[in-house]
Length: 559
Image 1 (tube, rainbow, N blue to C red):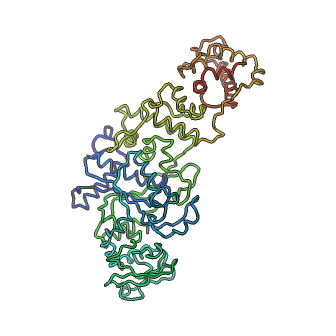
Image 2: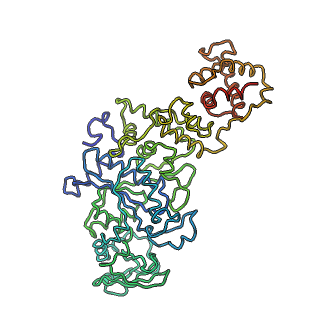
Image 3: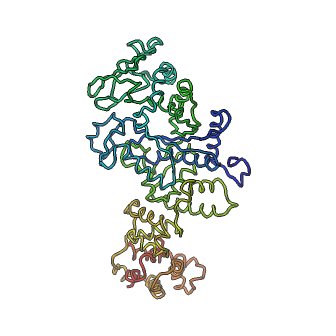
């Protein structure tokens, strides 16, 4: 029984539950009313550049649905296609312009500029693979270069070419603009026996045998011999490829996608919302897959874009876009997963690498506490559960000792990112604080604007100390009198620092503050920030004191 079908309170439902329900219902329908032995959930992407946080939604949408299906005891696989046989379209920013030479070649045939990887496609697969491992995502990978070059799709290619007239009939219904200079072909021409056939709309395109680019103009095709002749617009060479015996090209995308649905037996596959618009890949593919390949379009969900706060829509053809690997430098793996699990695919959202990170960690920690109370289990907790563990990796790494991210980053701020001092300041070992400790240090030192960082004074401000008012001198004197030689407890420091203005007015540190004391506290705190970090505000004072240590605090505050 699916989540949400019994007791809603005991078994909450979310978008993953509903999407899995639809995928399984579809799998039963196409399999004659019974679930197949293996349910296939598919994703695919072209590794043309950095695989950014928008692309990550393709992977995680499938991952969460496959995990839910597996949770129900059903045999399922997450099948991922690397579309590395796609053409290299554009040289990204920061890459040697000489790589323009490779435009039009398959991504798998373009050299990696660094020489570190076998080719361009592998260069961008590698960091995403590592990030998916850290996030506990398991998938079966398929490289489309290998599939096409090995002849695995040869019969499907020949089928598409043989039925190109039917494909064109479907395509023409959705086409809003004719191919420039081309006219509609007649049924007689589409038979393939006439030299006037409109080859501009041929469903298969070879890569030039001479220069390896797809910049070819088809000149003739013979159905009986399956010889396809072409001339390359770049190198000028002319060649003939035999489609039945030579594997030198690929189907055009709107034909390739439905072909793979049938070949792989795909039951569920998401796509960007643009793929489901009229005339898009999915809507055209639904019309082609049955008549041409004898298959059925998978259950589909469209997902919206994921952006980064303050940045335009991401494009992997441009440099500098945030990737999953980059996000994992500052976000624990469950938190990054949670950003995608908690929102329906159609909801667009931004990932904020700035101050929003502090609120995000606070929200996650609060939800973690809620998840520990069984009677509070709801859809929000269900999203937390999906984010926190996977069927293959188990529970994903989180700190053994949970210290608020904002505290860790504040201490790291004033200790120049020192993990050792930060751990000592908060009273835990480095191992107990990982992986959060490293991410807090990375965030504060590499992602926070230097102008927003805390700069501790290197020496006391003697001029300001010499000009202290009576109240200010009294506050500092009281503080230094009661300041311990070592700071073992941030809570004790909090009581002490907030208590000094109370003591100055004859109260005890445990007394509730009066309006006068609150005013004094505000002025006292402002003084302390000025003397310690030459600013009107900064990290919480108890945290700042703990990070600096008693000796340094005394050196900066003593008149």
